[in-house]
Length: 281
Image (tube, rainbow, N blue to C red):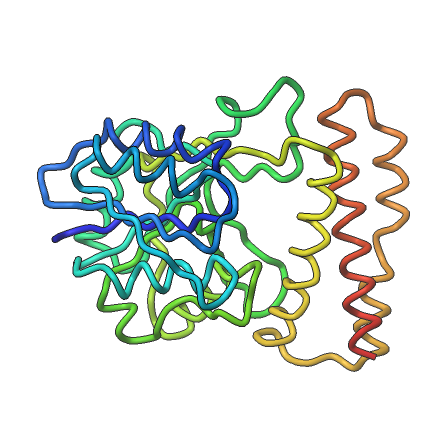
């Protein structure tokens, strides 16, 4: 097997069929498989996947039940795979035509590969703008000053996995940034593959946007502490008290639902930062 497409999955009954339909229409000249890792879903996710195993012969369902979180689920998928490389996508997105071949070919040449994201197909009018990163990479302005990509469109070779291990299961969020930084600090370089496109789906309610940002920001602060050097509790709090004036300005600029979703995301992020900074004091 040359490539395993690994999808962590928790309560994705509303979206998993879209992703599996997209994968069913993929082709590549090398052997490849799909491994969906059920992380203790309680809805109809498993039943839907089982139906698709009748149609997609290279689709496997495994159960990752011992721990919660996409890091654990992906790691269980890696353990179940026998391929030379792994490509990761999510249960609530949709891979574009040619994605498997693009990722597969790139992973024959590069040990760490990121694709690009499209935000138009799966989102309603006036989607969030500030969270979009069409290039697929984020370039932080703080230590370790290394780019990272989302695990919704990421791949790496088995040799890299053997060298540095899998996803850090202590991170329920931003585990993709942690993996990219760890890989680069070990000497790997991220290759951006522009032909590997994933249609990305935003959260469909303001409240879910808020909670996602809150959780991500808390985890990201912990990640910065791990890789960027420790700050004193006072310095950390002072750092994350900044930006509220900018947030107020953005509230005054709200003109449509997309603007409002951006503001709610930024609000959740700032509150998460503040809560995490206070907890570190």
